[in-house]
Length: 150
Figure 1 (cartoon, rainbow, N blue to C red):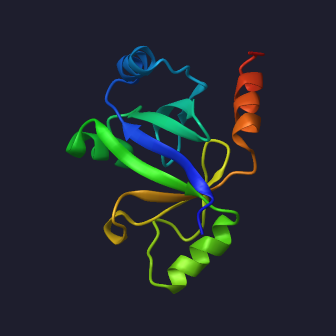
Figure 2 (cartoon, rainbow, N blue to C red):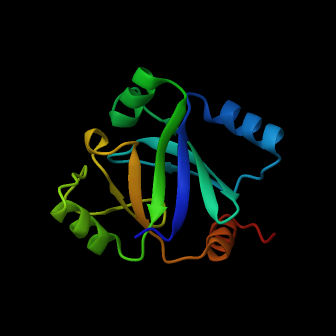
C-alpha cells in the first residue's frame, strides 16, 4: 500500500528558531520555505533527509485548525505522510474498510496531493500523499523555482 515515508511533520511556534536549531544541530540544508493560505494558514520549511522530507510547520495566524492544534499541543510531532501510487484509489479502499478522512477528496499540498486521515480514526496523525516527482526531481524543482542551481 505505501511506497515510502514521504514526510514527517513537526509543528513549531517559531519557524525561524526551529529551522536554525534543526540546521545547526543536524547539519541539514533547508530545501524551501513556503506559506500556504486558505484552509491551512501556515508556513513550512522543508528539509530532504534521504528519500523523505522533514517539514517544520508553524501557524501564520492566531486562528484556524493549525493554530488551535499548536496552541493545544505545543511544539512537537504533527503527522507522518505515507506516499502511495494513487491517492484517490487508496483513499477509496480505506474508506470502504471504514477509515474516515478529514475531507471527501484529496487536497493540493505544497506540490502533491494529500488525503488526511481523521485524527480520531487513526493511531497517529497520518496522511496519504501522491507525489509524481522523485526526491531528486523534487529537490531540483524547489531549487529551480527559487533561483538556486546548486
